[in-house]
Image (cartoon, rainbow, N blue to C red; front, side):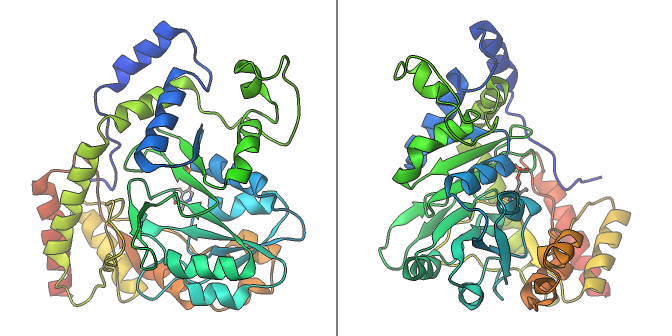
Length: 382
Ligand SMILES: Cc1ncc(COP(=O)(O)O)c(C=O)c1O
């Protein structure tokens, strides 16, 4: 069977685990946590980074830090993972869904404009498959209405956006007030479970360590800035342990090798499938880079997609669909019955028709060609 995903280990993880044991500090915010945070801050120029136990946790920190709560509205794409919305629901805010674009599952700026009200406080953008949302337009909308931008960059490590306005090439995760990355085992760089909070808005930096450390000023205490530490704010236990950080650091040491291989596999799929008339392979816009997190295409119908997944399974290849649009979820129907009936046609379109192919470091070129051959055979016979 060629599975959809196989988490990659670099081989250095064991050695770094042993070093954690030697150092004798296992909880968070130790040597490897600092190394990882510094790596991200220096490689991508992020103002402040905090390692978390997941992207879900990092998003919850985003909701706390941006002070989003009762009476506020947050605009979120419906075609995303539950965590993008749940963080704000937990804070008591009202979530409002916007549609995806026709050309890819990213949030549509025109759809955002339609749902802005005087209560809107923030826009959550999800860079689907590591390909940037239309940040020039979304930035303009946010500025005009005084809204914050939260980047759900779960899939977006090592990907860039080139602004048409400034010509600047900026890493995803640096484009909002705050951003959240995932290092779940399905991601390009992984630590089993894991995440990263990026704080770009300087006004939110001081509070971030406190929220991260269960609402206490423990980090200040350990730096000798206060002579006792105490409960000062909201927070939770968002820190990742040193084992998670060490595992992640082993992966970061091989980031370029991992990315190169994934991009090579992505290009092979694109080359081998792009002429099939029955599918739409979204193009990477000229002002976006491709971090090869996902190779996906869109079938012409739910029936085509189901038949394809079944046919591939019969031939020992696992293809998988992705999100179920949130505005039609069981939870949201109860939470906001009136809004759950709105029409978001592209969220429905990707929910029903999008399919993802196996993509992982250890996938061989022979296996990639098997997958391509079987997909071509399916659509020729259809
Ligand atoms: C867009 C998006 N946001 C958030 C998450 C949650 O990430 P994690 O599993 O690290 O909490 C995911 C999970 O894949 C995701 O796809």
